Length: 247
Image (cartoon, rainbow, N blue to C red; front, side, top):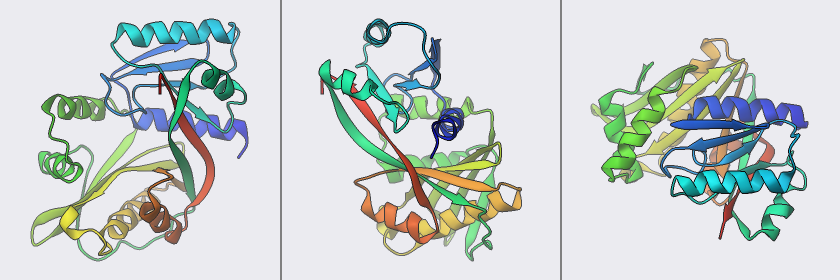
């Protein structure tokens, strides 16, 4: 994938997973969310720079230190030599992640009790927190606030069995691309195809709304998820990785 296309997807992904606070600095986007997720607490290199790179890295490190956070950079295949420079400064690579895309999703809505809402219902949030094992109340509050800040079109899907949510996921769409995220299944029901069902439901909903492409982000070590997305027709287009200070 060309660098400009990667930048466009990175922009849209940032609009879909919004940090609580954002600083723009000479083409770099600094995101802060009290440490909840690397995506929302890292530096993205979006546009060409004019300031010396070492000077910029030092600036970023000071900003994150002031927030009590390690400095983390999110680098894609388009970011050239910055990764090597960061590694020389003691940064370590964590969670390499593939971005996968599906062109022209045209799927029928799967069978099952599936509901969609524009905003996350309390029932959806409770299920998500439970399935993810997210018990920390402060982090739950951060997640809620991050969802409230998303301005692009969102859909929250819930798959129920006997009236109880057993899988949930969401999408955020703009410019003809829908990002599938927050995909999680009740641990008691994993390995039975419900993850596939909730993904198909979101893809069908997105296609019905006129979305021409779907994409998602999957950690390379999550082999079952990778296989699921490949079976749905997704293909890898690029990789990003986090480089974390002091790792």
